[in-house]
Figure 1 (cartoon, one colour):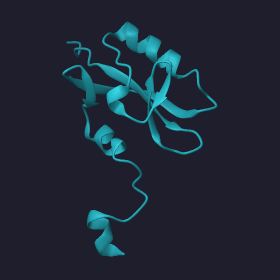
Figure 2 (tube, one colour):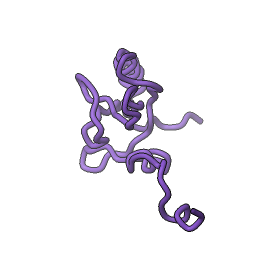
Figure 3 (cartoon, helix red, strand yellow):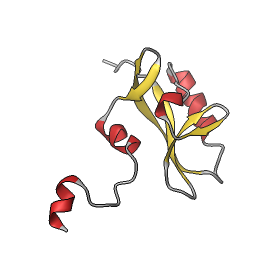
Figure 4 (cartoon, one colour):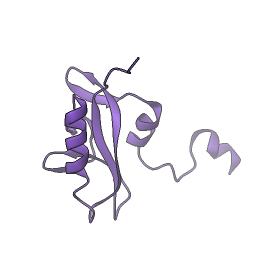
Length: 99
C-alpha cells in the first residue's frame, strides 16, 4: 500500500555561511515557519526544481517532510528539529562533560 503524501519543504545549506535555509518564494529564509509548502507530489517536484535553481547560493537542496500546525510548517522528524537549532560544532550538553 502506498504511503500517504506528507507536506514537504525544500531545504539546503547556505553555500558561504553553511546555515540551514528553507526555500520561500522567491528566495531563501532561515526560518522554517516561512518556507513554501508543497501539498502534493506534483507541487513537491516543482518546488524542488525551483529551489535547485540557486547553485551560487545553496548546497544540498532536498525536500523534507513537515507537519502543518495552523498552516505553519514544523519539523516532522528529529533530524529537521535538530537542524533548526543551528550549528552543532561546539560542546554542549553531554559533550561538555568530556572536554
